Image 1: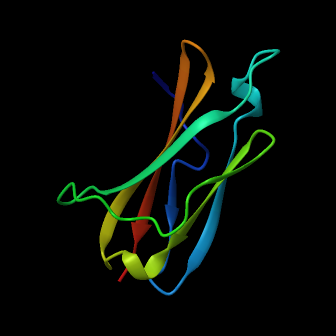
Image 2 (image 1 turned 120 degrees about the horizontal axis):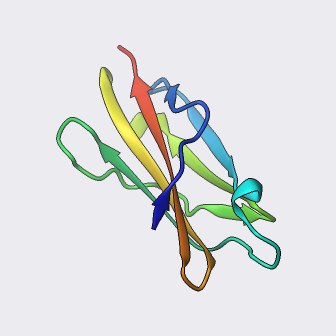
Length: 103
């Protein structure tokens, strides 16, 4: 499994927001590859607890979208959203994003 930096590497989100976060995997795919077996985890960087995501990720072409509900997050905390997908039999990518929740 390989991890790829995303831009921006971190994102600020309020507890009052519910946002679709989209990740375009196009540049990671070789000819004949496609996005499959998508999984997403959201983990608190403070206590390593996992946050349940209300919705499954959706895939449209090479774009993976995960809705994050800010009401499930705690103020003044940081979280790691990790989007993992398979591109080919032996090729798995993880796209990590740090979500910062201000006061």
